[in-house]
Every structure is written in C-alpha cells, then in structure tokens.
Image (cartoon, rainbow, N blue to C red):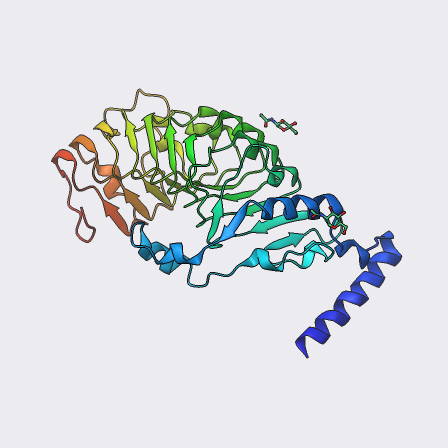
Length: 327
Ligand SMILES: *[C@@H]1O[C@H](CO)[C@@H](O)[C@H](O)[C@H]1NC(C)=O
Ligand SMILES: *[C@@H]1O[C@H](CO)[C@@H](O)[C@H](O)[C@H]1NC(C)=O
C-alpha cells in the first residue's frame, strides 16, 4: 500500500516536473552506459569471501558490531540491467549519474589499482568501501579524481602507503574516514585545506611525524581522531582554535610537551582567546602519550565534556579537581 502511494506520488511529481521544466524524469533513472560499464569492470576485480570475517586475527569485535549483515551486493550487478537498481548503487534523480556507492561490509577481496574504473565515476558524492580486504592496495592518489565527493569512507580496507597530497582536489569533502588501514608517512598539510571538512578520522594507521599546525584552515571540524598512530612533537596550537569540536582523540601516540596554559599563552597568537572556547567538546582523549606539566584549568572549564581521558602521560599534577571524569 505504501509503495503504491509512493509510486503515485512519484508519477504525479514527474508529470508536474515534466510540464514545468521538461525534465525527462521517468527515463532518467536508467543508468548511463559509461557508469554501468565502469561498475561492471570494477566488479571483475573482486571475489566475495565472507569467511574472512570469521577469522580472529583482526579486530573481530568491530566486524561483528559494524557488519552484522554481510551480503554479496555485487551479485545483483548484471550487464543489461539498469545499474541504478543495483544494490549499493545510487543514481541522481535527474541526471541519472551514479552519485553514491556503498559496498561497505562487502567481504570483497581484491585490489584497487590506480587505473581502476572506479575512478571513472566522477559524479560520485558518497563512496563507502569500509570493511573490505583490498590487501596491500596502494592508497591511490586517483581518489582525488572523484572531485564531487562529500563523504569518503575507506576505513578497514587494507590500504597502505602515504596519504596523497592531491586530496586538496576534493573541495566538497565534509567527511573523510581512513581509520584502520596501513597508511604511513605524515599528514600532508594540503589535506587540511579542505575547508568543508567536519569529520576526519585517521586513527589506527602507521602515520608519523608532526601534526601540521594548520587547523585554522578547517574551522568547521567537529570530530578529529588521530589515535593509535605514531605522531610526534607537540599538539599544534591551531588545534585549540577549533571552536566547533565535539570530539578530539589523539590517544596512543608519542605526543610530547605540555598542554597550553592560558596564563602563559596570552602573548601567543591564537591561544589568547581559546579559554572556554570548546563549548561543544564532549570527548577529549589524550591518553597514552608523553604529555607533561600541569593539566590546565581550561579543561576543567569545558562543561560539555562527558568523556575525558588523560591517563598514561607524564603529567606532574592534575592541578584541579575533576570530580566525575576518568583521568
Ligand atoms: C555488456 O553487454 C554488451 C552487449 O551485450 C557488451 O557489448 C558489453 O561489452 C558488456 N559490458 C560489459 C562491461 O561486460
Ligand atoms: C583534480 O581534478 C581535476 C578535475 O577537476 C583532474 O583533472 C585532476 O587530475 C585532479 N588532480 C589530481 C592530482 O588528481
């Protein structure tokens, strides 16, 4: 009954759109042949192997939690049928181009080569390949060809190598998740040029070096996770200008130095105005680093915090009372 209603609404809407704007809306749901053939070629590089999800060698609890249902979505991808009806594929309602691809938890085993036809799908706005086994695929700079992307999730994919500096191309990106791969090298500062970025997760990789001090370029950032890497040096001062942060997780790195103290920092540009400037911060995890000195009072003054973890550092004094948080 619901479907019938939906169909009626859609047909009425289409007739209306056609009369008003001459959109060919009923036929536009047919997949473009270039998109269809790019997807079919992409499919040939993978096998479906759900038994890999049974192994204990990985963070298996995550698979169980994140991927309760594993389904061979690509089995619905058949030549001669409309690719907009294939599982995991979303098309634009007017142009008909493939704008979304969700193959997460696909138990796909294979490689993504730099010349993969995936990178022909330049209208993609959301791409989710999380929880697959692209073992030892180099992390390709070709992702930067997908210039319409707003959401990119490549967590738990087995990518290795450095993060390409060509990511600056993805100017519409709001969410980037590269958690749990084998990425190494440092964070290219061009990555932090993505002004629309609100969510960035680079945790559980092998990234190292200093964290670039350019967070003042991505002032919309709401969640940042850099945990379980090998970052060194001090926490960059620009991090403390991110007034919209709700989660900051830098745990399990080699970050050193002391946290900025508002009393000492009045003369340092950017720090002078940060006191009480995290009105939405809910999670702050700096545990398991080499931080030292006093825990500054401004942390105590963040009233929105419900998860605070500072353990396994070399703080000399807590300095203030934290009645109900874990330290
Ligand atoms: C799909 O089928 C057509 C004709 O049946 C063929 O020409 C084309 O190469 C096929 N495409 C793929 C990607 O297999
Ligand atoms: C950036 O995007 C353009 C298309 O707008 C593309 O031609 C170019 O190859 C991309 N650059 C990189 C480094 O991928």
